[in-house]
Image 1: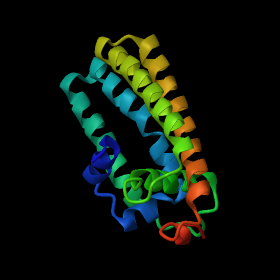
Image 2: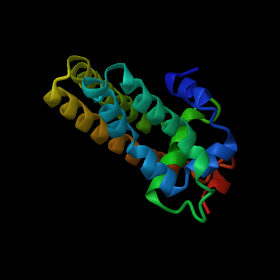
Image 3: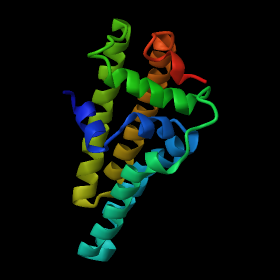
Image 4: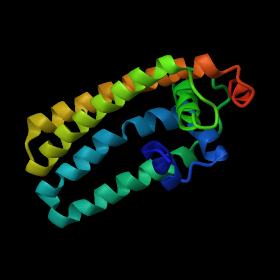
Length: 167
């Protein structure tokens, strides 16, 4: 089981939850979660241990968000296709994905990891510039990754297992 699959399992991403998460409102409001988590973590400067409250609220938001929104009327948009691509990517052991996607996805995840490490260092040391640099780096890498997920889904949308996902 990959790291990404473990996260999906922790978040209990059932088929119904995935369908709801393809709603662009779910996608975009969840996209803002990392900046909120950074802000909540930074709040320890003012709140001390009380910062655990906003951190917990943001983590709860990350978990509940895909469940809050209804299944979208259409998945014919960039945000929905990004989510569908993530599902395809997570399912690659059962349905292999085209090999030309693997190097770029590995690279975007590596770039994301480096940005995350920089942001984490900034948060631990309460140093603003690495926190903001790392956050920006992660958001750019995540956007690039999601754009590749759209491309991956476009390449796989005619597979029998995925055909009904686009409507």
